[in-house]
Amino acid sequence: MLQLNGAGVRYRFVIKVYTAGLYLTAKASTPEQVLSAPGPKRLHVQMLREIDATELGKLFTRGMQENAPRDEFSKSIPGTLRMADIFSSKKKLVAGETFSVDWLPGSGTQVLVNGKPQGEPIREPEFFTALLRIWLGPNPADGALKEALLGVQRLPSGGSSQQQ
Image (cartoon, rainbow, N blue to C red; front, side, top):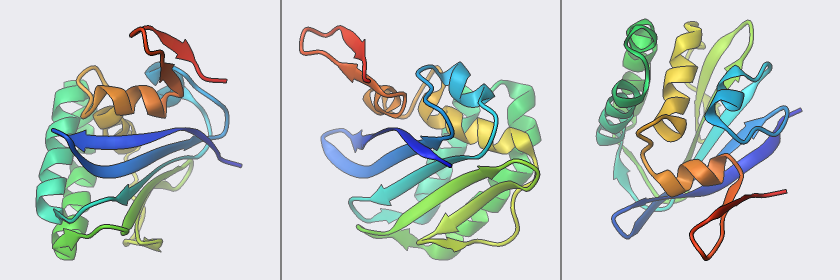
């Protein structure tokens, strides 16, 4: 059974782009704990504004390249191309639309758009890990969103505290 590990909003400059939630079988507060956790995992995204789906795919690919070790990224290329195809065929995502990326041990990574599976699961286990690194890696898309997904709550003084 998956539980919400953390959730937050992705900002680009001052514009809210999407909300994201990370679901795991047990709480994790570091990227290493999330990536090594056994069992199913889900990253769920709900769009807050319209975005060109091809552009989103390019941003994901760049985020994976910037955060995944080279060998992991090279093994994830077939899955990256599949995800790019899924988003480019969609053209755009509008406010309210969702996509989820589910890791299912023994099956692979299932991409869902608005709750509907998009083809067969992506088999390479490296793909899901490289994808999560977009948000949880050393160069995350949004540092505040990384903390939110890990369940870390910022204190007003600039320090941080573990959210219970």
